[in-house]
Length: 166
Image (tube, rainbow, N blue to C red):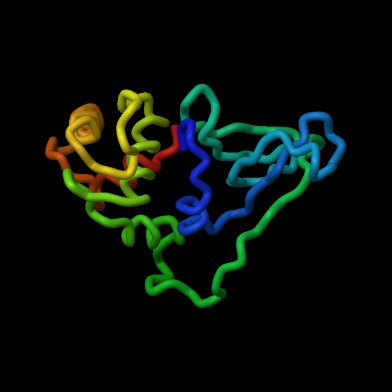
């Protein structure tokens, strides 16, 4: 999300169709200009997408089918999840780890860029895989603005708020 294209992290939880665009409409893979996640295909020759790279925001967009170069569908197990009443996104969000100061790794990087996509970027020059004081400060600000208890942890109540699409 944000100004990062950290595809490994996205692929680990993504279970939706990916759409590839060629703004010239040539349908040529070598001419692909843009990629989004498909939310819906409408009867008026448009597709509704979720994208994380429009003016540093996560946005829902409607685009014409005429500029689609193709779709991609990640290969996932066909086994049903543990709770059939829950959407795949709800199941995945439940598996995201609790993070706090001192946490390290790609989950911290995901938090870093989700905050950035919400307009709460951390100043440059820091390691985006280490949950330190700058990330703690921004997360606390996000929690306060979201009306959530203000502490320095990112857990099961914070991930859904960060992943919400406006």
